[in-house]
Length: 327
Image 1: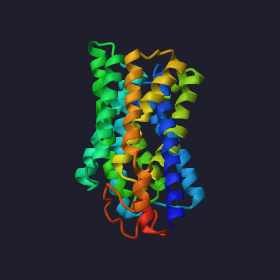
Image 2: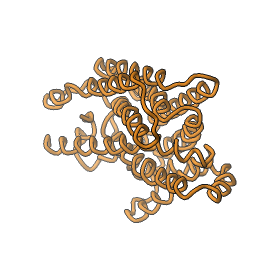
Image 3: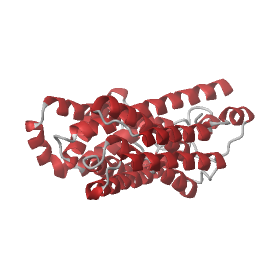
Image 4: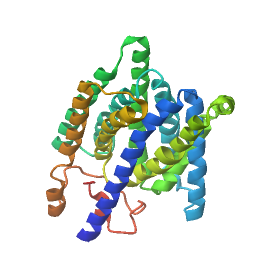
């Protein structure tokens, strides 16, 4: 049983790793494609592409529609995370660089940890709060180092902060939905809902696809298939096997990767302070993950996870595996 639990933890960790890398690349592709697509059109194109891919996969796997108990979380996260979040982030990256956007959005894990403790009963373990504090300090440093100032920068930061808030709320409502449906079902449902919410931008999308260069259109397709269809599914898979707070803090690795990718792909050279802030972000993640081996071996955990009953995605296996925190 212990061996099976450790194998489950490794799969969840690998899924979280895929999410982190693909989400980091999304900030760079949004910054690039955003030169030819307006925020709403880019969001709709990305979501429509992802929805097609996910519906096909759902049909092939034969999983069918999610259970009724999952739809509340799917609807809320679909509108907020797949809809509002993507439009706000696309709009924000028209005013600030990719690295700054990633850092501002990553106030989200702070809100996720707080909401997870208050709403999901995950508690407020000292190691998690310490890691959040260190990583958030790094995020602030990078945000300040990359911001060029002025009204446009302020608007960009405000939009990215809005994206962070909708992300945090969505994670908290998505977590219970994953006790009633699989990661693929929840992601597909949310993506389809987000696509419907963005349909008012359909006219813009048609006009802009006709005039955009092929590289920007391919960038939009990439955003739909990989950072959305693949990464949101691997996120949900890992979230179902750990706490919302721990998953949120894991994404603090994203800004450091974004700064590096933007430097290579877009020529956005990070300031010295950005490097310092990125290292602090990584240090915060390390703090939250320290000590996990000892806790798992003794059977102890510092974050209580609510009972998910027999309807969760892991109901076919040992319930203890589902409750284990991601290492």
